[in-house]
Length: 252
Image (cartoon, rainbow, N blue to C red):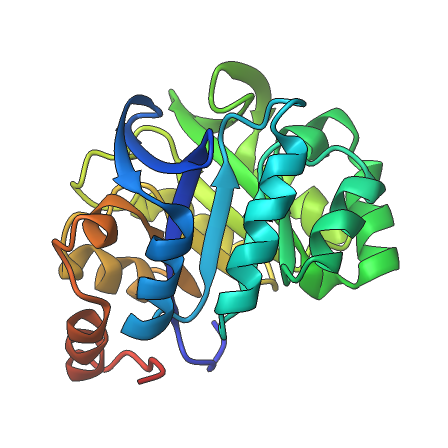
């Protein structure tokens, strides 16, 4: 456990330059223009913003860099970008247009040395490793390619390895909970947070304020959510007020 203020991070899943949202990684609906949505969160008191290119096709790569550049200009809060980042050059390009951190997922599994290289070159604080975990009997398996492929790798063991390789933070998404709005997976959140000495961002399943409070009480350093913020089911300022009233330190 650390004593820093807990962070609230809205997540923009972007496909073909539009923000989208689904349930358990499928059934996407449009949720707006990324720049407009990003500006709104900046004004509403989000601590950071996460931007995931879920189409991440090679064709769309430059478009994404352009969108990120536009968004970074408008933001006063840290921006993390993920999706389809495979090389040190990809990382460089995004950091150069103003994003603060990059998030590696499939590429980190396919080439774990990329984590070491990125941490050495840009600093651990820039390197987030995203882990999409799905329950498998008594353990959790890491999935890649937007959740389509089960690698068979144990999520807790992998989190320890990425930490040792120099990642500064882990974005832990429960695929079982994603988009369901019935709460984060507290079991893996707690296990991972207790095991590691780097921040764990809980993701997948937020439906009400209490869920976010519970994730923080189970060791998460930050909570990431999408649809509850996009469709204004929860206002960030009200959420922070609620957390303060429940003894959780947040930045107002």
